[in-house]
Image 1: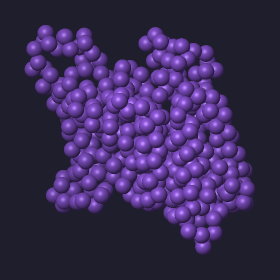
Image 2: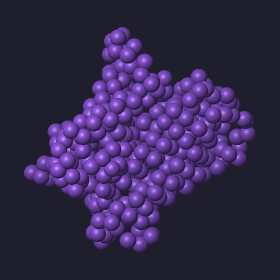
Image 3: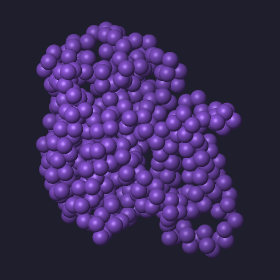
Image 4: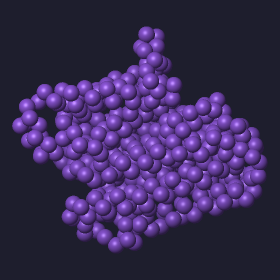
Length: 442
């Protein structure tokens, strides 16, 4: 595949990743971290860029995408985990959240307070999802639509806003807030969960591989190499955007306090460019959220049509867009309230699964290693998720609080390592001949 084609596939992947959370969270991190901005943004990039890239690489190394990764734990786990991931990044959380943010930033600021916002939201989502549906029906055109046209427009718009901010905003960074005062690197690491990109990468990996195959690449090593190159293009663009909009947020520290990233960016754009800034920001959010919704819809459509071949791709895309439309009209706050605890549960499992997959051959792909590490990680992450839902039990909370790294939100790390070691020990009891057979098979 030519370099130019690889570049545009990478831009397509960037546009699929870059949605609501990617715009909202970096500037809010910036204003919170203040003078601790750089370690915080590095932590954010590790999980917001590095982890999704690792997922893409892991997907390129297996035959059937996320399902194959999950099957290394157990076939039932592979099926259930993958379905949950696709539903969560698709019609249940990811797609409705992006549509809602597009409305909140692209339409709501220009609608009077006397107008019924629920009715306007419904009308907007009908048009929004009709366009998503029409573009999703022809996934082979993804590179042309998104890589060549939409993504460059999006990047240029973000650069215009941020460069204007760097020129006009001169107040120094604030001192970090309590959350970033100590261990800002780890706080940024946890903040990176909110982009949902590591989960999205489980779905996007297959879309990218399919796109590259359509370019004539079929040999496995070339396919892996092309996938990695495209992922690096997308990752570089993501990291650059995170840094510049994060810095914009940090520079806004001297201009007031804000409840969230949308309020911060809205104030910044109006302060810098007046009404034109508000229009530009609405355009950026709408375009970013739209491309992500298209990518997620295509990924979900391709996956579910594969595991349920009796259902056509068109039918599944229709169901996904209609379901997303209905859930989007519940409102942004309700969607976020449900999605955050879910991320607390899903991200540690995804991280451990991907890391094990990268080092798969070094422990012979032993199923016991996968199962034990994922089991202990899952217990802790599920309990953390339930706690985020305010389903607390004091003895369990006290036990979780005593785990190493609990103070920085990484209480699952040591259990994962313990599970890994237990799996390796159990594997030693397997007959040597069987271990060798499994190592060759992996």
